[in-house]
Image 1 (cartoon, rainbow, N blue to C red):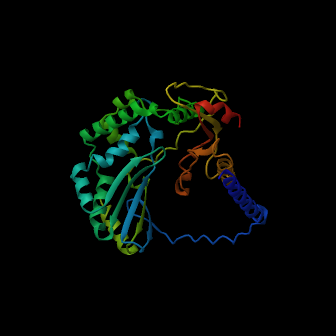
Image 2 (cartoon, rainbow, N blue to C red):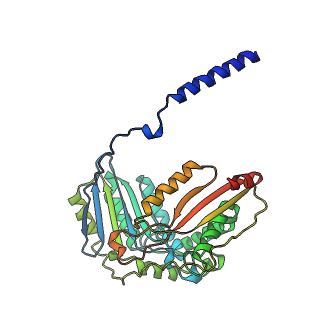
Image 3 (cartoon, rainbow, N blue to C red):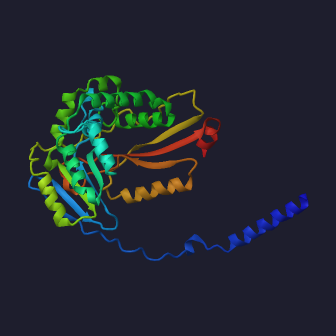
Amino acid sequence: MRKALLLSLVLVAGAFGQAASKLPRVQDLKFPALREVKIPDVTTFTLPNGMRVYMLENHELPLVSGSALIRTGNLFDPPEKVGLASIAGTVIRSGGTKTKPGDQLDSTLESMAASVESNIGETSGAVSFSALRENTDQVMALFAEVLTTPEFRQDRIDLAKTQAKSALARRNDDADGISDREFASIVYGRNNPYGWDETYEALDNIKREDLQAFYKRYYFPSNVMLAISGDFKTAEMRARLEKLFADWTVKGEAVPPFPQVQRQQNAPGVYQGTKTEVTQAFFNIGHLGGIMREKDYPALSVMSASWAVASPAVCFWRFERARDWPTAWAADGAPITGILVCYVSAAARSRRRRWTQ
């Protein structure tokens, strides 16, 4: 029986060897020419109130969706109220509007299989919607209400802050997250918004009037770009938007550039944190990178992908915060410098072997 099994293995190995010998070399592989990239014909215009609009018809499915992009972000958080932008982004939707509480919005949208959502990230805020074609008017009316008349009800503010504190309480459960968070703080520094972290004290400092002031500062028509795509007629959608936002004529001062990234004096260096109850070790190695519009970005992206493919068990290169605003705002907003970072993870018992690779 053993001899028969051994013979079978030899035959299979021989077959694989013959097949491998017939494979072409990488240098001999031929590929067809890439298809031409066709940019869709996007309709752009500006509403009378100053809001920039981008529209694209797509009649493949009976759906309509849109997103309002607002030039804001948590980089504008006050140092004593880190988390203000994030809480505002949540409560703009969950807190409801002046005429409709959040619960009423939820039930109305659910009955139509639709959604209206809001959030604020590092360098932008968004309010978005999705609807079936036959419900477009009703859902877009709710979307416009959320965008223009959020109420910031206190119970939803308290809920959002409680959820944020719960996330703070659990964040050290993820050992990988500890290394990512601390690495960013070291590279960017802890004395600027790029290296700040939310704290219980900062969340306690956030009041309803702070959220209202934050919204008033950044949410005005000329600071918004609205993109809509789906199953509609362009002329009809334009007329709908002009009617929906005819009364939203709020003016605001130009939003300042994002804070500049300053190279820190405490780098380079080696920094270590110990978490004894986990069975893995995590390493972050890197430095300040660049931005997407720099000429070297495509080459760095290829390098990043090739590293991950060449050594998937050892190192992954990624770009963190390597982004920039669209051309329309490039003159106003400073580009955000990213991090070029290598992430390494290994089981604690084998970390020495993997690291020396």
